[in-house]
Every structure is written in structure tokens, then in C-alpha cells.
Length: 382
Image (cartoon, rainbow, N blue to C red):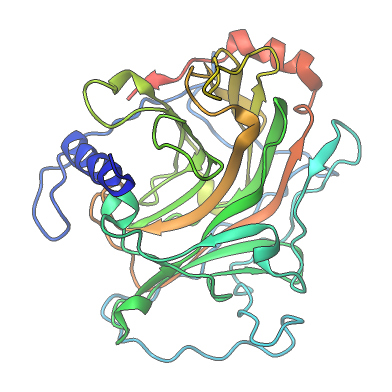
């Protein structure tokens, strides 16, 4: 089966699952596929006030990180030129609006597990040094989900800021005379792989929360790979501004035969639009073998954390790609099946990466991981 046919089958499967017709046609309201994740003995996830000090977040004022979009129906106008001297490279992108810029990035601890990969977010370094830009519409099926965006490598859609952040900016200009420019965004794939059989991937992210917008931080095997059988891990994703994070593991098609190969836990984060969130994905696969065809024998342990709390665990499925050969993806999608056919209002929607790193072990070491494992819930079948 060709890759595009696989994408088509995935899109059609999503349509059937959520009872969604192609964009522009009426359909019944979709049923939610995920299950809520509440921590043992606690109410649904609430942000807890933290003491001020090194390594702690400062509570941010109410408001969105991204620029608030203008009212619908506004005609496209030529955007203002970038502010001078913003970037050391000519033609650098405009800065994040001052009223929507997070006031501080998280402090980076100097002690703890050894960090073996951390990209540099510096305006003098092109984003393409650490990431490959995927480009285009993902034809013919809009990246498998009938999405609207045209991914570009333009530095108006992905750039480093002077204060050390990576920004992926989705721009909706529905009245733009050039159809290719009506919905633009960035989709980045790390040039580095996870590289180890045991480790921890950590990101501090501010996610855009708005109708028709779908930011994601996830993993796929290094190309070329066979989708979906070699696996997909979703660490942070939310859509339509519902403040619901979806931790997922996929290794099958969206059909009845593969129904057990889609595991998910939903975590409600009511203040998601107002502060950076810490996401950790931890893997421990050194005790697992590799089959003769190069695929994993399975059985390694995987665990997802949000703000330091375990929210989902699962064993590595057999037949997937060995974990050390997986790459990191960051993107902001718009519209399509997952957004239930909703489109974003005109404006800019920023996914801000405050820090991104891979460590040899999670915070607290493997002893903490062993302690968390029996107390964490398994992924639930979609």
C-alpha cells in the first residue's frame, strides 16, 4: 500500500470514527474519543501555586501567549515589516508581541541527570541547523487529516528569539489573494534521534489555544519508516482551545482490526493558555531485543509526565522501530478532521518552545521512575 493510500485510509478512518464529513458539509457532532485522566486520590488537574525561586514557574497573568486574532471578515493587508535589528540575519521575523510574550523561561537546573542533547535557540543560528522543515500541504489528504496549512521553511513561521526561545507561528490570512499564503505554519523534525535505549525527553511549551488550531509535540521513527506499524508517540497535543492534553501511543491503522493499537489518556489543564507546561517522555528499553527484521521485540517501558506528574504508561509494542531511532516533531496544524472542520480566525498563533533537551535519566533518576510505574495508569483504547 502506498504512503498516500495509507494517509487516505487514516483520514477516512478518522472521519468514520468521529462521524465527520468533508469540510463544508454538515455532520453530526463528533463523539469524544479520549478518556479523562485524573491523578490517584486527586480532583481533575489544577495548577498548584508554586513558591518563587530557582526552578519554579512564576504564575503568569491571564491572557493568551499568541497574538489575539482580529475579528472575522477582516480583509488581508500587507503585514508591517519586521522591527529592525531583531535578528542578526537580514529579514528576520517579527518578535512575539510584547503583550503576549511569556515573562520568563523556566530555570535550567545545573545538577541532575546528564543532558546529552539540547538545541541552541539563538537568532544567529538558523532553525534548519537542528531541524528539518517539512513543507507543503501534505497532498492529497492534507497530512492525512484534511488540514488547511501550508508548511513552509520561511522565517516568519519558525524562528529563534533574542531571549532564547524557538517559536513556531501559524498564520491565518483567509482573505489573502495567494491561496498558498492563506494558512501557513511550520512542521519541524529533529535531525537528532533519541539515540539511546534509556532516556528522558523534556520540553517546556506554551501552546496556542484557539478554535481550529492543533499544536503538537510528538515522535516518529527516523525516515524512511513504515507508518503506522513502526509506531507514533504523542506527548503534547490539544485542539480547538479545549485545554485537554492527549498523551497517545499508536501503531496501527484507524480500523476495527487495529482498534487495540491506539492508546490515549486525556489530561485537562485549565490554565494551559496562560503558562508554559512541562512535558516529559521517559523510555527504558535497554532490556529489550531487536528482531531479525530490525524491529523491536517490544516490552520496554514508556511513561508520559505533565508538570512532573505521571499521566500514562505503556509497554513498547513489538514490531515498532527501536526507540533509539526515533525523531522529535513540533508543528502547529490548522483545521481538518481533528479540529472537527473548524477553521481559525485570522491572526497569528504561536507555539513557544522555551527549552528542549534529552537526558540520560528522568529527574529523580530511575529509582523515581520505578516508584512511579505501579502508580501510573495504562493508556486506554480509543
